[in-house]
Image 1 (cartoon, rainbow, N blue to C red):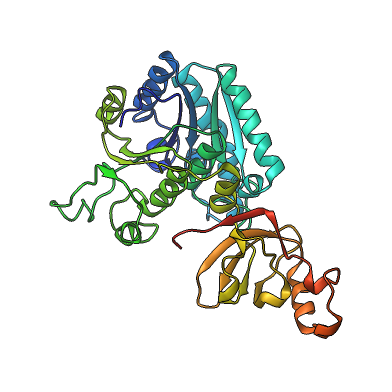
Image 2: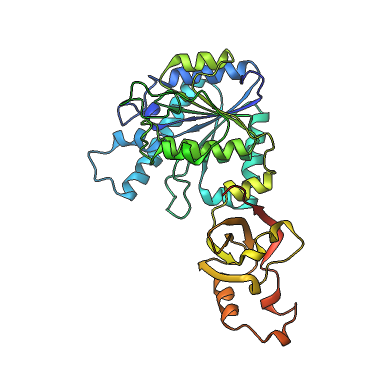
Length: 367
């Protein structure tokens, strides 16, 4: 239950802590976080900081603009330097800026490069500071929130602990701001659909900390075997308790049998581009010696290319697996329409070649 015996810690800090007034950078709450990071490093622990707030930090340089996408990206570009400067001042250690997009994390070669870079930085005593690259992101390539980005980064570098700082004490059964009797969950052993229902939407009914994305992040990180905490980053006591080996908020326990790294990456990081629907009789194909061919496909949804990731589902909606495909959606649809006569079928013909390579597949459980 303690972080004291953990070696590698990822801590995520949100915009409200960076810019409590809505713009600029403030040390009001960051000083406590910086002291916590320094204390961890002094006792030999490695710390990776995932810091939001570049847009809010850059807003002070714009005179009441209409906040279009372009203006927001401009705010992020100038605010990122402001944010790095204040962290550098508070921490007093060499920092390394790492700006990522979801496309970076979904590309296996870049994913491995990110991991190797962070490993090298940590080995040389530096503090990696990660943020989403807001200047270049679009809907197609962005993660969208730094809770999930932090979980993806923590998994990439095999972190031991993920700490998400927010403005409430943790996960409650009801909104604590409107329900004084709301109960705090000190420990969560399983992330169930009921927990997601409690979180509500992105503007959470549980609290103002964006609890939905934090539960999503916790599901990703615990599946990798990472102890995950949601704490109140506005209270210095939260960090004191962590350093004492206590739980100041909500502790999500890691899976006893974490997913293999490649399966975790496919399941929790890579975004599917489409869907392949198969008949119920073949839903166990991923765990058998059988190959999936066009004969087994009932429908193809979405547009995807060779090497893209798709979800494989049965016709009753059960998600069976995520996998990389050997054919584009256009070709699969064409083959389905032009199925040759069974008497002429041959394994070397396109319609009977494996659609999915077994080395690029992740079986989905409990979906």
